[in-house]
Amino acid sequence: MSRIREAIILALGIAFLGLCIKQGINNFAEKDRCVTVKGLSEKEVEADKVTWPIKTKELGNDLAVLYGNINVTTGKIKDFLMKNGVKAEEIMVDAPTVIDMNANQYNQQIHTYRYNITSTITVTSRNVKLIRSIIARQGELLKQGVAVVDGGYESRVEYEYVSFQQMKPAMMEEAIKNAQTTAEKFAENSNSKLNKIMTADQGQFSISDRDANTPYIKKVRVVTTITYSLKD
View 1 (tube, rainbow, N blue to C red):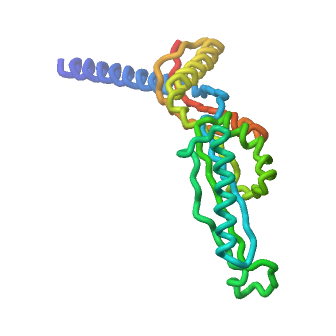
View 2 (cartoon, one colour; view 1 turned 120 degrees about the vertical axis):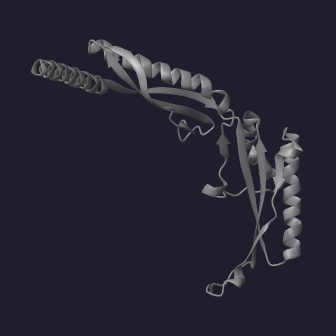
């Protein structure tokens, strides 16, 4: 009887082990049956904030005279801006930057003028259309003897879209929906069905210029990555 009992226990153990192995194989197979897809949401919007640095220069040998000229120029620019609808609180006047040409001991070149003074007036506004229209007419300052100089890359007009937080929920929903549509199509083509989400990556929002010629038009973009498990 003991041998029969031992044989039964052994048989049951082998059967149980077989079931465990089968379940493990099935779980392993199910684990490998998944699909990873990306969902995109992209919108074009108009910038809602603009920063416009206006630079002017004065050259000469008398600092007092140069500062007087800078103040006159600054006054003309502020009048021009405010007459065209820019608010006083949107205008910031920076302290002038003075370069003494004779202060560089390594530069032995003789300069016509000793001092080079740069003045910067910065306009920051949420009324982008208005500021763009004024930028297009800044040549009118020339009639008043005011020459706006090119400040280079660091002083270019900057356009921003600061209201994108309001768009985030709807764009995320669209990106997830697009990812699910792609996954469902894959499952259909592979004679499977979507199961649960295994992993999901929200992705990062990016804001860029639509192109080099229209920096005031922004492209808002988000890509989400989702992995679904599949089932028969």
